[in-house]
Image (cartoon, rainbow, N blue to C red; front, side, top):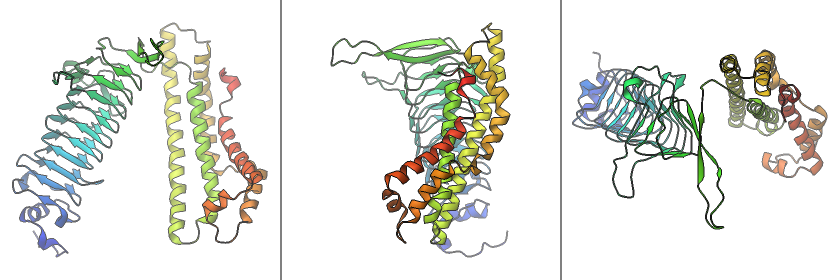
Length: 433
C-alpha cells in the first residue's frame, strides 16, 4: 500500500487510529478521534466513516462496511456491533447491536441489551435499554423506550411507529422492574407480515403490557391495560365530571374498532393541508416581494435569501407529495367501506370520491401556485409604504413602523394567496359544515 500523505495532526494519532486509516477507514480529523487500546482494528471494515470527536472502545466493537459515526455530534461506542450502512449520528452506545441500515439520530443514549434490526431506529434524543426493535420499527424524538420489544409492519413504508415524546414506564413505586412490555410478538412478528402498531406521541405505556398487532393508540394516551385484540383504536375520552371542584377526574378510555386504510370524513384533513400550503406559499411571496428588499446588501445575505427560497420550495413540494399519498389511499378506503356494506352516498365517502376525482387538477394547481401574485392592489400598497422607509432601515424596523393601512393591505394580500389554495377544495361540494 502506498504511504499516506502527511497531514496536520497525523503524528498525534495513536497507533490504532493509524492502522484503521491504513485499512481504509475514513477519519476527516483523526487526531480528534479516540481509539481504545482494546479495539481490534480488523473488526472495523474499510469504508466506515468516523467523524471528529468520536470515541471507540471495547474488544467486541465491530462495524461493517459503509457505517457512519458522528455525522451530527460525537459518538461514544463501546462493545457494540454494527452491520452494514448503520448510521449512528450522535450519542452514547454501549453493548448494543444494530443490523443493516439501522439508524439513530443525535442525542441517543443506548445502553446494554439493545438490539435494533434492519431499517429500524429513532430520531433525535432517544433512550433505549434492554430494547428490541424488529425491522422497520421507527421511534420519533424525545423518547424513553426501555425494557420492551416492538414488532409489526411489512416494510419501511408500512411500519410500526412510536410518536415523539413517548415513554415506556418501566419502574414501579415498589421499586421493581418486572415491567417488560410486548408490543406485537416474536412468533408472528419475525414473519414481517403483520399490520403495524401505532403508539401516538406524548403518550405512554405502563409496563408490563401486551399490545396486539394492528393497534392504534391515540396521541396523548397513557395505556395502562393490555390490548390483546388487534385492529382496535385506543384513546382518551373527554374528562369525567370532577368528584370535587379541586380534583380533576381521570379521562375514560375509549376502545373502538380500527381498520387500517379505512378513512371516514376527510374534509378537515384536506382543508387544513391546503390552508397550511397556502400559508407557506404566502410566506414564499413575502420573501420574494418584501424580504428580498433587505437581503441583497452582501453575498451572505443573498445566500440566505436563496436558501430560504429553497427551503420553502422544499416544504411546498413535501406537502403536495403527502396530499398525493392521501389521495392514492382513497380507492382502497372506498373498497373497504363497500365490503363492510357502508352507505357510500353519505358525506364521508362523497368527500373521498371527490378527492380522487379532483386530485389531478389540484396537484397541477398547487404546483403552479409559487408564481401566484395574489391581490396585486393590496400588495402594491404595502410595497409603497415600505419604499418610503429611510435608507438603511433594517427589515425588522421597517415592518414595525408600517402604518395600520399598510399592515392591513399586506395581510389582505397574503390572505388572498392562502384563499387561493383553500379554493381548490370547495366546501359546498364536500358537504363541509
